[in-house]
Image (cartoon, helix red, strand yellow):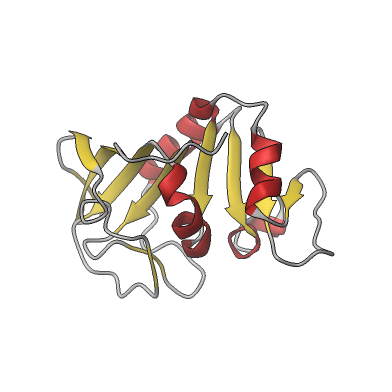
Length: 167
């Protein structure tokens, strides 16, 4: 299982239900990684999408504690066990955790790779990803620094040597 995220220098991922600083190259990378793949997300993250609809061109699996929650063109898992059951038919490299905060925290121990866009700045986030480096993840790759509207950023890949088996 993999995760994909954009974070600021404090590992912030969002503020008031929105991305911190949308960068076209980051959104393009997100699409390249996740298109034709399985994406796992929470109900609140789904509510931030246009029309509150699942992402097209992907198999969307929504995590929700609400037993009545369901959405067209997506599957819903109401527990970790149910999620893992839905994911079993898919290869791990085709599964991406895409947020939000509680879903990242829940599934972080089961992810082997993380694709992280690291923003060079503090964007006063109110939602965070745990600091992967402090969690024992290893930086595997880092791109050159790019800039968008004066904000620097890098594309990074982290590996989790202690990833748990969820199968």
